[in-house]
Length: 153
Image 1 (cartoon, one colour):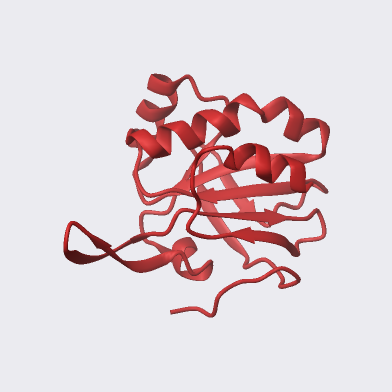
Image 2: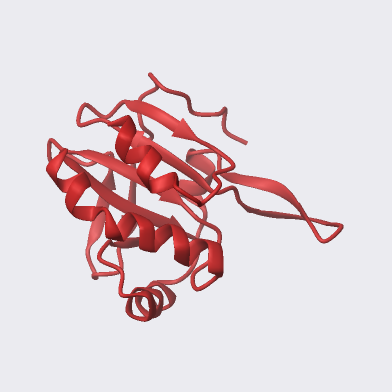
């Protein structure tokens, strides 16, 4: 397990496949910041609410110089269905091998319905254009989260 990433740390360097067929580099090399949010599963109620909230605020994040990228361990095909079903305006990256989840420390032991299992802890990382972590939210509650992140910038 990787040590928890905190504000002031350098962002781990990772390349992931994205829903539009491209590859993305984290941190980006485009002189823009990045809102990187990890979510457990495509097409589940909480994840759909979170992705739609970020998607709805995309223009506001763009204005402030930040891109948005959602990450889960679902496949690119699953991501594409999720984007179409929810009319998302943001890209989703696939971390099927779990390397990004490990690098950011979001692959954790969770307790659900009395069972213990491994899964993604809903987390968001605000990455500055300089590649440093500006803010971290863990165990995210979906309601008003996208607005909270936008207000932090």
